[in-house]
Length: 131
Image 1 (cartoon, rainbow, N blue to C red):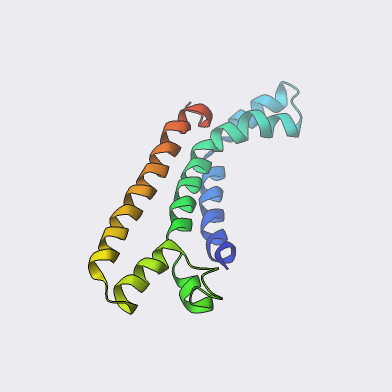
Image 2 (image 1 turned 45 degrees about the horizontal axis):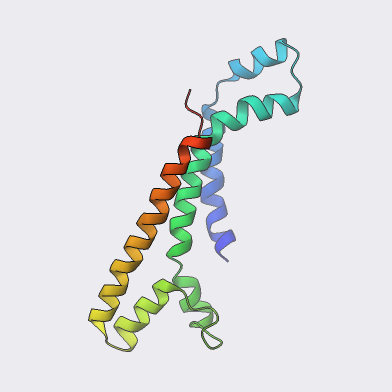
């Protein structure tokens, strides 16, 4: 369900990134005798890497925030096999009425997502191309 929910948004972002790549690069490479695979590997992918990084970060944050799929489809069951962190925070607050514990878990969740996003930004320097 998550793939179907997010694939349209991600494809729109990729299409915007592809349309922002100038055709001059491909034309110059074609005149130099480059084939389609080399043009894709050496021109399109490096110029699309900032878009891929954005989609990676947004998708990772969205994957941590999965709530509605669990709430609507399984209620965290059977047992706790589909229990997500955000659904557990909701259960703590609104099912068990432990608002303090849910608030503490919310802060822990925030720090966890912030840390993982920070790591992605640190590793960005290795593979995101800057013209």
